[in-house]
Amino acid sequence: LPLGEAVRTVIFETNKSVRELPALYARHVAEAVRWLRRSYEGLSLHHRLAILVPDVHFKNAMAPHLRRALEQFTVGFEFVDAAQSVDIQKQKVETLIYDVVDEALGSEWLFAVCVGLDAPLRGGSTCTEISIPEEVRWRLDISKFGSASREQLMRRALTARTRIYQAMTRAQLATVVVNH
Image (cartoon, rainbow, N blue to C red; front, top):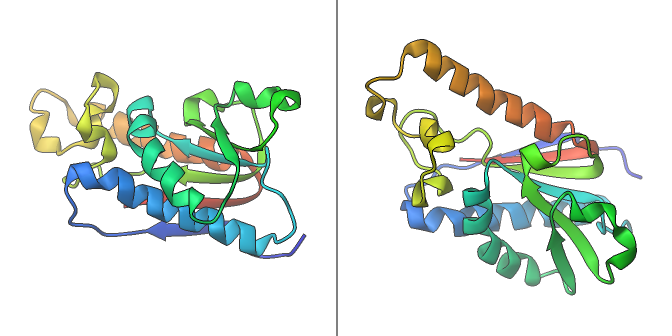
């Protein structure tokens, strides 16, 4: 295996609307996967790559866009979640793990693409704004949390940083971090 970057970051600015963010993230994730393929040419990504996202809403919003973006240069693959990835005997095509970081704890793969785990805490938008569950509302503009104390906001920021660490440590060889 070639020696190279253990961690690569893709941080992008955008003025796109919330509804356009899943497609934009998918394009950057597909480029990260393409970079891994080029960097480790000859090594199959089958059951070796995990694409990890912050929550199920983010995962569902980005999935169709990511599939289309990856199909431009990858033929015959399927997404499985971390739990399904354990049973590699049933997998007939190239399998890419695509799941929420919290579901991947305890598992490791050669590569991880960590997506949207450090989205802006102040202002800006994330894919999860499309449908905002209680557990991710902290990602939005702080002014919208009049009742939240500074301590609560700091805990939420720490949670975001913890998720990045958790996702990065799922990789044994290389990690790509994609955020806006």
